[in-house]
Amino acid sequence: MKDLEILRELARQYSEFALDGRSSARKELYRSLNSLKTVRPPVLVFEVPWGEYSGNPELEPRCISPECRALETNLRRAIFQFRHFEGDFAVHDYYRCPVAVSNSGNGLVCEEDTASASTGTDISAHRYHDIIPDPETFLSKIRTPVVTHDLAETERRLCFADDVFSGILPVKKAGVGLYLASWDQIPRFHGVENCLMDLYDDPEYAHLMISRFTDNHIAVMRQYEELNVLDTDPLYLHCTPAATHELPVLDMDRDRITLKNVWARGMAQIFAVVSPEMHEEFDLQYTQKLFDLCGLSYYGCCEPLHAKIDKLRRFKNLRRISITAWADVDAAAERIGGDYVLSYKPNPAFVAQSSFDPEPVRAEISHVLAACSKNGTPCEFVLKDISTTSGNYENLTQWVATANSVIDGFFPR
Image (cartoon, rainbow, N blue to C red; front, side):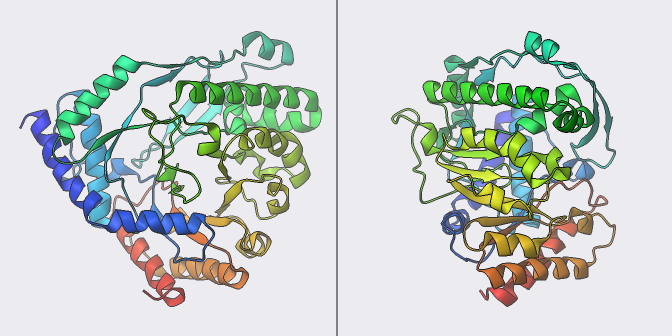
C-alpha cells in the first residue's frame, strides 16, 4: 500500500475513538478534576516501553517516508492504547498539527556519556561532563535563546495533515507548551553532583546559574507570546490532564494568546535530596517568577514533595502537585487537603514482572484513595516512567483493570 493509503486507513480507525463520545466525556472529567472537584480519579498510562512490542502487527510501521512513518507510529500507538490499556485516555476530536517553532538554544552544548536500556524504553542513563565549571566560563558561554516560527513549514505541515485526515477529522494548529524546569537542565551542563555541592559550597554560583536560566525562560516565554504560538488546548501537561474550565481555548489564527491563557509546568527532580528551605531558596523563588506570568501551574515530577507542600503554596495559581510513589502520600494528602489536585504516580515496578501480580497494585491504589478520601483531596493515577513490562503489554491491561476495580469501591460507577 502507498503511504497515504496506510495513513488514511489508520486515521479512520483513530477517528472512531476520537469521535465516539468517550474522549469528550473524559475531557469533561479532566475539567472537573482541575476545578478541584472530588470526582472519580482518572487512570492513565504513559511513557510505555514501545520497543518491547516490536514485531506486533498492530504496531509494525509500513510507511516508507520518514514523515509518514512518524505519523503512522503515533496513530498506531494511540489505537493500540485504546484497544489494550485504555483507562481514561482521551484524544482530541481533531488532529493537532504542531506549529514549526524552533529555538536557537542557550549557547551551552551538552557533553555526556550514555548507557541505553535494552528493554525497549526510550530512557537512557546519563553521565554529564562539566562544561561550565566556574562562573566565568558560564557567563562566557550562556546566551539568550531566539525563537522563530517558520510559517511556510507550518503551512506545509497543515497541507500534509489535510491530505491524511480530509473527510475524517478536522485539522488544527497545535501550539507550544511551557516546560520550565531549570534544575532538570542545568545538570546537563554542570553535572548532578556539582549542582548539589554548589548549593552548599558555592551558593553564589548556584544563584547565578538559576537566575540566568530563569531570565532565559522569561525571554523565551515572551517570544512565544509575541509569535502567538502558545497552546491553549492541551489535553495533557506531559502526562497529566490539562483540560480546564478556567483557561479558554483560543485560536492562534484569530485570537491574541497571552501567558495568562496557558499552563506552566515546573519541577526540580535533583532536589529530592534537598531540604524544604534550600529547595525554596534555590528553585521555588525563581520558579514563582515564571508561574506568576501564567494562568495555572503544575509542579513536580519524580521528586518527593510531601514535606514541601507548604513551600509550594507561594505559587498563587498552583492547581496540581505531582506525588511520586516514593513520597509519603498520607502526609501529602493531609497537607494538600482540597486545595490542589494530587497527581499520583504509581510504582512502575509492579508492571515489570513477567507475571502480573495485582495485590501490590491493589494495596497501593487503596492506600492513596484512603488518604485522599480522608482529606477531601482530588486525585488521579498516572502510571509513567515504565522501563519494562517484560515484553508483555497485558501487564498494562491488567494494571488498568486492577486500579479501576479498587476505585470502583470508592467511586461506584
